[in-house]
Image 1 (cartoon, rainbow, N blue to C red):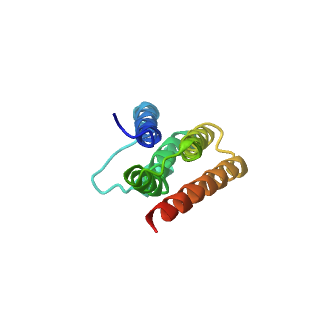
Image 2: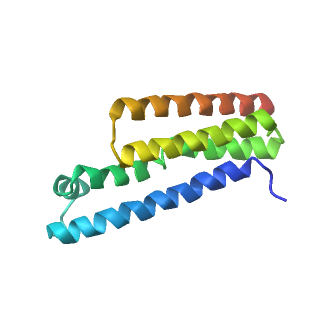
Image 3: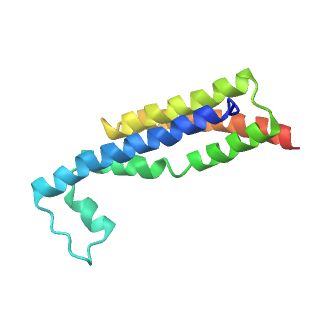
Length: 139
């Protein structure tokens, strides 16, 4: 049986694929509807300038799921390998995942920056707590 610490990490991986699907479910129709020309010389910035903001938000969030969460995955593996996944640590890991999902939903829908930032900071503090627990297990 897999270590319980791995379940939150797998949930965040699956959430990343949800955002991937949402990204393309909105981007492809927007490109077709807007008849956006796609020459080989077009850059990401050129494309973003032609897409509505609410379409770009999904792509931005998908990219964000490859930034700070990479630390989460490393910390989770360390916690699982060291056997440091007690009940509090597992709750923290699920809390991080929940906050990242909320962050995604805020960014992909209304994109209210102050709300998004508050959720990001809360997730960051939870990740810091997880990292400290992992450091204590390693050192």
